[in-house]
Amino acid sequence: MGKINGVAAAAWLRAQGALAHDGACLHYVWQAYKAQGASTGRHAGTALEAWNKTERRHPGDRNPPVGVPVWFGAKAGSAAGDVVISLGGGKVVATDYPRYGVVGVCTIAQRQAQIGRPYLGWSEAIFDQQIAIPTPASGGGSSVAPAPQKKEEEEEDMIIIIQRANSQLAKGRLLPSGRTREITPAENAVYRSLEGRGAAEFVTVSDKVYENLLSGSKATV
Image 1 (cartoon, helix red, strand yellow):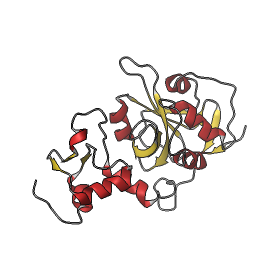
Image 2 (cartoon, rainbow, N blue to C red):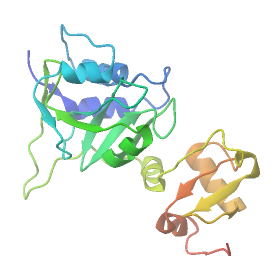
Image 3 (cartoon, rainbow, N blue to C red):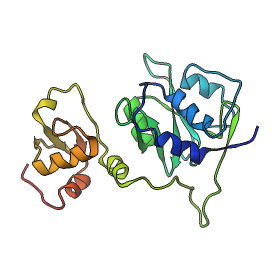
Image 4 (cartoon, rainbow, N blue to C red):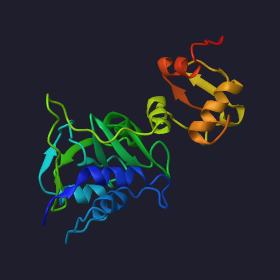
């Protein structure tokens, strides 16, 4: 059994966009590797079970190379675990991020905060299928996946947290770093282009990103 291209698997998962099923991280991650020729005789019903059946693990290491699976464990009320694919540089491509039903890019810490699960580590294989690990570029540092499109970069930098059920949704309120005020038409256009949802959103962004979005125009809060 030869090694498969993990970088291509990460790109495959990233290209999926909308997902047909929520909460199916292991299914989609396996499909990403399978699309590159992965095969195994092992089976698992959850990501945590898959971690326990996977070879060449690196428990606790928070510097996974690009293309390898990154794993999270059980939490109170759920022993399912979670698995994503590393993009290198501390970033991962994940299902159901930043919301259910879509694929997105985030850091390991952001994914851990989103799902509330302990970090387990990464592995050089998924089950017994080994993954080719790229050689670091000359001068040190990890190889990284291809740069995202502008829209994806904006989504990553925004660190968008959408609160679907919040009563504030209908009011079109924005919380930049803890401050609250009405969304302006210009901001509405930005969020419409990023999320396709319009002004009825409740989001949190950093001061830096917020100021960049306003192109230096600091409206009174």
